[in-house]
Length: 142
Image 1 (cartoon, rainbow, N blue to C red):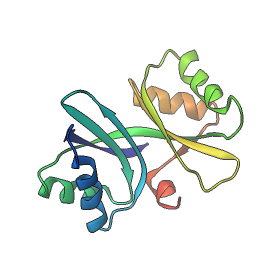
Image 2 (cartoon, rainbow, N blue to C red; image 1 turned 45 degrees about the vertical axis):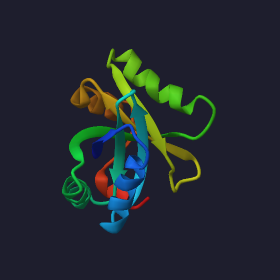
Image 3 (cartoon, one colour; image 1 turned 120 degrees about the vertical axis):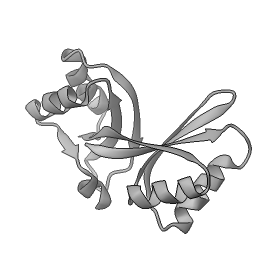
């Protein structure tokens, strides 16, 4: 499991840039990100190099920040590689709430961050199927 930071942002010009600038000034490296939006606000989801420094810096700039656990899994970097990993969750009747990807340093794998309904059950089923689950320490090496 890994920690994800969610930043709630007004849906107006310059707010995402301000959040990214804030992280850069704090010396925090972004490993992965995803943005979802509605008419009034957006959620910037991040996997970063230093969760505590990121949270502190963003909160000092009046951003609303939440930390939560996600599962970060290496998937085969080939056609249908992601689907074979998603089938593990589907076969175990575990709901996938959302997913986003980031770059791997390994040429034969891709990496995805997953928010699931039951993180403990998903972790166990991935382990039982020999899936490669990355920790915060693994992510730091990317």
